[in-house]
Length: 261
Image (cartoon, rainbow, N blue to C red; front, side):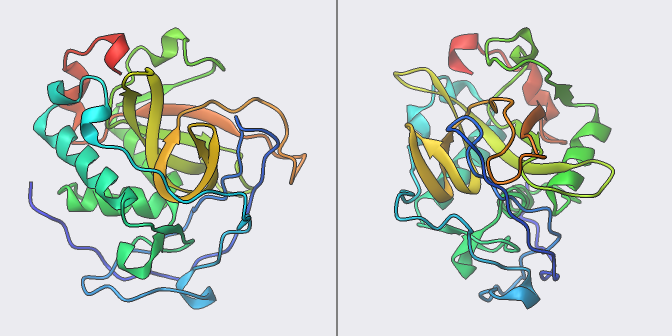
């Protein structure tokens, strides 16, 4: 596929969210609409939509990275999905921070939907929405979305989950819009030899290997506990579901055992 070039960032609102356990870790994620520029420049401050992570604690470790070959069944994925994963993991090696309002790695950081936007547009995907809610609607309209009600990764609802799928959450911070999706990441599969499910993206406080991390990183794929967020008892994080990337939907038919997902 040909590399897509994006438009410049726009101003957005700031927002934050915190949680009460490792399962519903802090994840103040972007619902913004900024886009990376063809000749990127650092974007900081309120005019760019950027704001520093609220949970910039010394107890938060730097980003984690793994090699694609550490993922079970990686060699059996399509060439498109393999390249998507390689591109995503390459970003985890750049020590990028969580930077609200940024979809540009040259600025030193990215937010959750900015990471998705950057990776997919550079994979050649067309008309990729910039915000998490828009990305959710994009997948829903393609017919690729799988809703999840259960709170266990062992649920039959995850039977179609494949590497490269987009993962969606709501309730990680307060929003007022029709589809209140607030967080998105890319599912990587299961890591060898532990078999634990992992994902990649940008956040300011989820975990990898049980240790809280911030920035563009590999993370453990855990489901929220269902408990109210400690920072806002009126909010409860919820995993809404997953779906294959529009244009990559042929990969849903790829053969893969449950052990390699």
